[in-house]
Image (cartoon, rainbow, N blue to C red; front, side, top):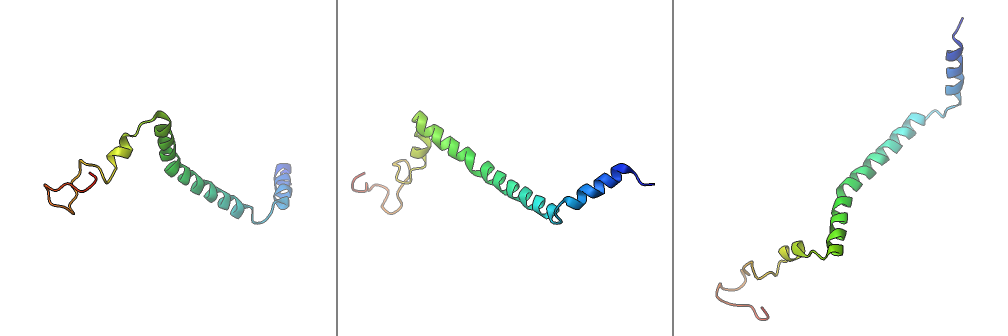
Length: 84
């Protein structure tokens, strides 16, 4: 005598597609890749947007390659480049 729940489970599994496990695995992989991209790029994007909104330009000035604080090695130390 077989269990009625076992029969119901077998009947239900017969209705499922055969490649269901592969589909679920692919969707899970997609979700992992999307979450990795979000974790990588969204914090920086939000940080930039907040800096623009608040008017904080400190990091933009600090990372300026043409800042007067850094020496320009194309010219001698006592020479000031034109326009500077």
